[in-house]
Length: 235
Ligand code: DX5
Ligand code: ZN
Image (cartoon, rainbow, N blue to C red; front, side, top):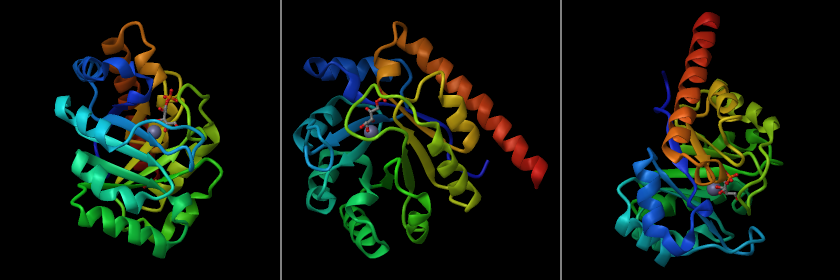
């Protein structure tokens, strides 16, 4: 396999915010690989969530890497704060830096702050081909399968072709899917070439969280194997 192992990244947006430490431990014990943290500024998206102090508080109790998704208009301005708060993955949106030059500035700033995994994200209505000039500069591409802002929305299957395009283009970093990922949709994502799966409501809304994560992981594994054998057959 050419790209990184499959990862399940539960979104803490669907956790009980009054009990974040307990929720963090609960989802880690249930099998989370990464912890997805949704940062919203009420400007780039019509919702406000959490900032660096809360990310730092989660970091205090977390054993798994923090996968921080910045849905904010000024990612460069807050890069240091989120890096120091403990972001392992730090992802900004292409829409706020929509050219190779602007995006490279953001990426350079993140790397300068020591962020281990730098990601770029794309809204459902943006063409993935726009990312072509910066694919060599990022470690992760986060494909939004809902319009960002809220958990619990319906998966948009039309974005799957973006994942296929990225893999066909030879992008071998992380491809992460975010929005409406569940037991119903994770297989489609994996078959297309996704290796990192964000899920909020499907995991925090589950009656048996460990069993749900285990089933999602298994579905992703099976579909990834099909994807690999298809590629092998066409090679
Ligand atoms: C949406 C966020 C997602 C969200 C996913 O704006 O970026 O990470 O928490 O939630 P679900 O899995 O419920 O769609
Ligand atoms: Zn997210």
